[in-house]
Image 1 (cartoon, rainbow, N blue to C red):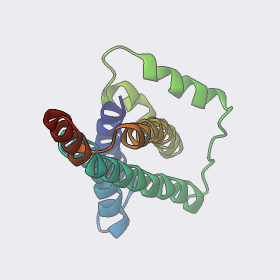
Image 2: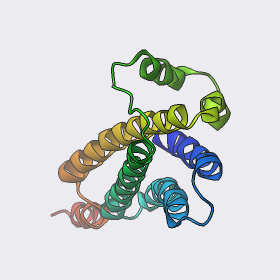
Image 3: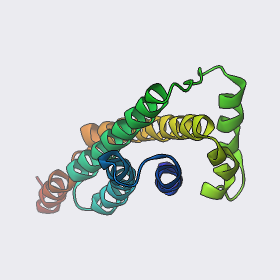
Length: 166
């Protein structure tokens, strides 16, 4: 689920920056790269999971940090443009959060919100918070698993010991 969210965040960040961030601004590139980094590090961490739990945890943490950086960029956008950051209890936020349960959810699910810069930035903030929440849950589970079961080397060592009858 965090990967699906990160795809949506990346795709909508591209749309947002094309519409609302000057094409010559360094911020535009940084926002797109932070969204891409979040998505790509989730994939890379998942691919590393079979051989290195430490790498999986590290890369998932990098994804989380990239998305946190992107979150601050959206908050900065609102502040710098005199737009309102919606409160977590705002009915519009609740409406956006409900879209998480939509079948076949993609970036297209949120496109109607992209027509206004305040709505668009707040939608992105909501989506990033959701993704970060999922990543936090995933990181806690990975850390518990690593603490309880160790990494690949430890499991291989234990298997060798068991095979030798120790």
